[in-house]
Image (cartoon, rainbow, N blue to C red; front, side, top):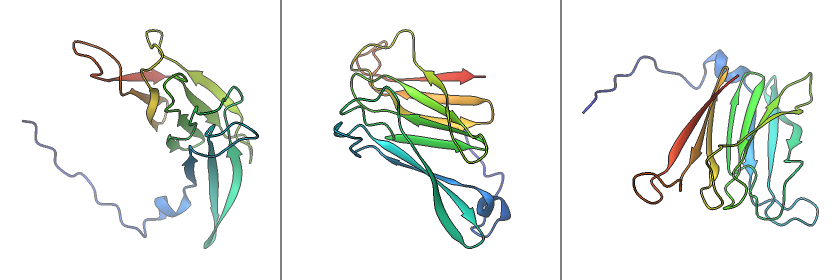
Length: 150
């Protein structure tokens, strides 16, 4: 078994953490008449207060796509996943001033309805990980993680 050792401790009072924005998923949010389409809310910090900067949504979203079931933020890039059985997408947004326009849609070429590609996302710099929790492999529903780089 591998051993993992801590390399740093991050304090709640660390200046880096205080300077970051926050991205909050609301996967059960209705968008118009689409129940459970989902949204993600971007917040920014100014001094001691937080304010909503924008609401992200999938332009191709549909009822039950559950956009915002997974979210990740790194610098000027945000990744938002879906958890519907048929969506099989993750979205990338790039900050432009105070706006967050859609930058890309990520999909796996071998994903099929029911895989739940987009059920988990992670982002760091130029790299994005997207989880596909029900992807079949050597066994049914073993799951997979896809690595994307820009």
